[in-house]
Amino acid sequence: MKNLIQDTLNKIKKEHIAPEPRWKFLSRKIGVWIGVIAVVALAALVISVVYFLLAQLDWEIYPLMHQNMFVYGLSVMPYFWLTFLGVLALLAFLAVRKTENGYRFNWLLIVSSIAIGILAIGFFISRIGWGGRLNGVMMHQMPYYAQNVATKEKQWMQPEKGFLAGTIRAVSGSALEIDDLNSVVWNIQLTKQTLVRPSVTLAQGQMIKIIGTRKDAQNFSATEIRPWMGQGMMGADR
Image 1 (tube, one colour):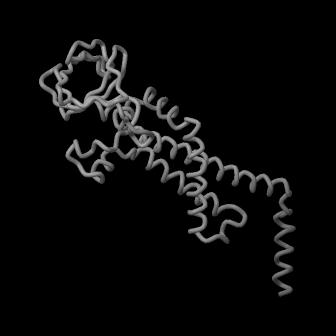
Image 2 (cartoon, rainbow, N blue to C red):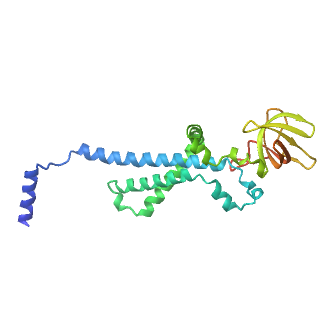
């Protein structure tokens, strides 16, 4: 035992080992926690984008696409953001484990705490609209992202599948003329069976969503007309 103590003392003298200053210890400790908070906050922002993307879609039309809910859900999942979220959650877990007492906590407790934190902050960020803003920036700045993320606009711009949306240019009897979301002019035929939702105003300048059948290049027969705003997870057509 004496030899071990003496060897240790000799090593300290030889290598000039000195106690680490307290400020360095505190700086490292604070830095780790700042990293944890930053990663959780970023993951919460990602959650808010995922919620925005899923909430804007009209989920109740999946039967009209001849799909079940599960298959349709898989087709519109924002995999880019979900992958990013998984990476951030893993980084947050590893960062917590590196904290002073992180090794003492059960991994399930750490995972559940991180998940609750991400969801709670993500809900707040969603309420103030940051998720939608970030998605808007990505849509304009990253063409690849815009091409591969499912949006309400893409959902309703599938005339070959019976979905069309745009702004009314003119109303004439049982017909409408609209500019679709790609600025293409369409003639919309209405019949006595066409269901026009009560919240729809068929007037110039109004944005609408149309369910029906494409007749040819620029003619569409409407079976139902809905207001552009509404439905999705956030509200309902009336």
